Length: 358
Image (cartoon, rainbow, N blue to C red; front, side, top):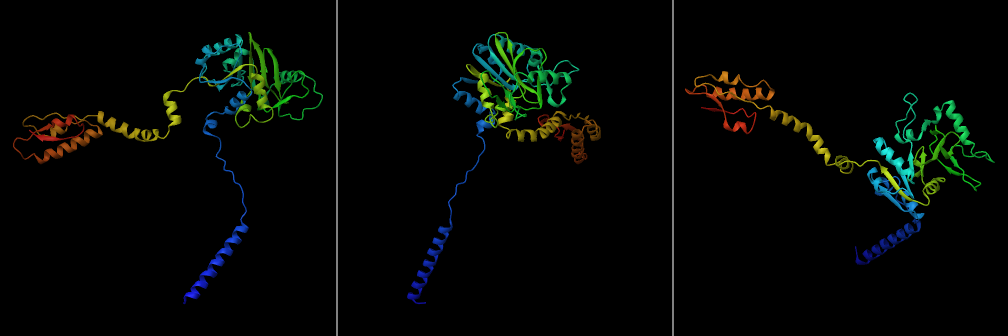
C-alpha cells in the first residue's frame, strides 16, 4: 500500500472516530445521583442524638449521664431529668432517691415499663407503683379503666370532632388548636390515686400523666419512641419535648447502670473474642488430660514387666501410656537385669509413658 493510501485511510478513520464521538456526546445527558450512607456512627449509637441537638438549638443546657451515680451531684431546682434508659435493675433505694430528688424541686420524666398485674397487685415498676400509676394494654382495658379514660378525655369540650383519632391531643390554655403527638396507642396509663393534674390522651387511651411530687413535678409517658432520631420530626413530637423541658437545664439518662469491662469489650470488639471461644473446648480437653497424670510403680529387681504395667491407672490416657510402656519392656525382656522404672523426665511431661532399663 502506498503512503498516499495510508494517509487517506488514516484520515477517514480519524474522521469516523470524531463523528462517532460527537454523536455520543450529543446523546449524553448529565444527572445527579445521591449515595445514601445511612446514619452516622454517632447517631446509630445514640437514638436520642437529634433530641439533644434540638434542645440545644432552643437555648437549653443539655448534658448526658451514664448512671444514677451522678444524681448525687445533680441539683434539683431548675433541672429536668429525662430517664429514658432501661430500669429493670433499679433498686428500691434508687427509686426512692429519684422521687426525693423530684420532691426537692426537680422535674422527673420517665417511661412506664411494666403492665399492671391484677393478681400481684403491682406492676414491678418501682416508680409506677410508688406513684399509684397503672399501665394497661389498650385492647384489654376493663370497664372501670375505660370509664376513667372517658372522664379524662372530657378535659375540654371540643368544638370540632377529632380528625386524627390515632394521635394524642394536648390542649393548652389560650390555645384554640391542640398539639398532636403520635404516641403508641397500644398502651394506656391509669391514674389510680387521682393525683394527675394534667394529661394527654388519644381516642383510645391516655399516654401522658403529670403530677406534683413535693415541690417538683413527675411526668409519666407510655413510650418515648416519639423522640427517637427517626420520629422526632413527625407531627408535634419535638414541640412536646421542648414544652416539657422549657426554662430548665436538661439531663438525659440513657442507662441506669454502667456496663462492665467484659460487656464493653464484647460490644465494641467482638471479633477478637471468636478465636478464644473456638479454642476454649480444645484447651479444656487438654487441661483435663494433663491433670490426669499417669504414675508407674517401679518393679522389683527380679520382677516382671506385666506387674509394673498392670499398676497403671484405668483412665484413657493412662491406658495409652501403659500400652506404650509394655511395648517398650517387651523389647528388653531378654536382658538378664531388665526392670521397668519411670523415666525422670516423665514428671515434666505427664502421660509420656517412657520406660528405661535399670
